[in-house]
Amino acid sequence: MASPEIDLTVYPDECDAYGHLNQASFLAMFERARWEVLARGPGMDFYSRQGVSLVVRKSVVEYHAPGFPGDVLRFSQLLVHLGRTSFTLRQTARRLRDDALRATAELVIVCINQQGAPVPVPESLPPVMAELPLPGNLRRVAVNGVNLAVDVRGQGPAILFIHGYPFNHTIWEHPVANLEGWMRIAPDLRGMGQSDAPDLGYSMSTYAEDLLALLTTLGVDRVVLCGLSMGGYIAFEILRRARERVRALVLMDTVAEADTPEVRKARDGAAAQAREGGAEAIANSMLPRLLSERSRGEKPQLSDRVYRMMAATPVAGILGAIGAMRERPDSFPLLPTLTGIPAVVMVGDDDEITPVDRAQAMVEALPNGSLSIVAGSGHIPAMERPEITTALLSRFLSTLPRPG
Ligand code: MLT
Image (tube, rainbow, N blue to C red; front, top):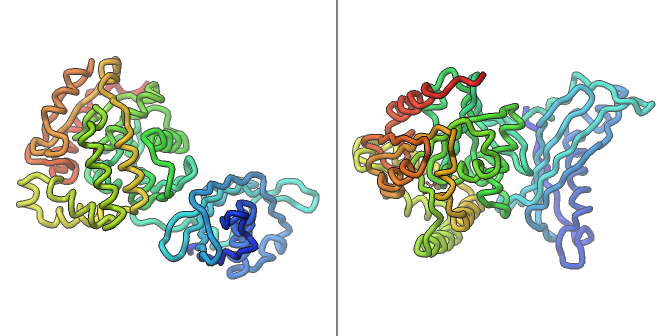
């Protein structure tokens, strides 16, 4: 059973001199919402009936955007960790009228007895604490101030799939379902898919920090990185920060250089388009260039699916990604330094956005790189030619030394 959502109104007496919901009042609202969940479920005395008191040992609040008098905030909560004597709750506050994220709070709560000594969490932890369900194999992982939705499957050495813009983890459906013998990790980036979409705080560094923290939380030390397009830009950032954690690299339909002034101008236009016309406007303008002529002809339902995926992306995530791509550094000089990291550059032979000659240039700059061309594909090979893409990935992975 999912935890009920609690709606609370912001009152003027909770606001500061600037008319913003005061941070201490915000913390109190998070507390009020937790009590409400108990009040509407098993009762406010649920824990005391079992001889247990709850104390907050740690609270971390991220204020993503202000609240104002009259705003109705919708609070949801989920259990992100259950220990022996403590548990961690993650709460999210969104503005009801537009679902915009306002703040998140993470609390470590310890169970104690009347003498103040820690005691085991009651076995009958109320069902209202149960983790909110996500579709399919997705699970929520709290990292770096946001909840990421992540598809994790299989055992073995790990491969991290990083999707492009404005997509989500489902572009990797085929390799994630089929690469047996590997732990396949396919997150939705912040701002996309089912992950949280804060209003602010997007950059290549933030995406990279999110993913490194995700790997740490999943207990993964070293990984094969597989990034598509913007996912490749993030892979470069991960390499800059933690190359010792990268066993091998798959760069798919991506480029290494920073944006040119013309591309930056186009990004500004896309941001204006997203603000005015929402995600649908972005989906409409991108769709014609994404898929190969062959995919468009042979797989009309794929165009619909890609459109729906893009149109469902939160505008905050779209704007964040546009800004992050616009400001990203030139990663081309990084390529020759990647000695000891086996790499394959894959690209659809009909990719208009990141064409084959750009892929070829990266292969030439890499000390240990090869080129794999996906015949009949445009910008999203894992969706357009899933079997071929998974076979090429599998062939590359089979050349890597197994970790000792
Ligand atoms: C992507 O697929 O991630 C984007 O097309 C990349 C970009 O716009 O540079």
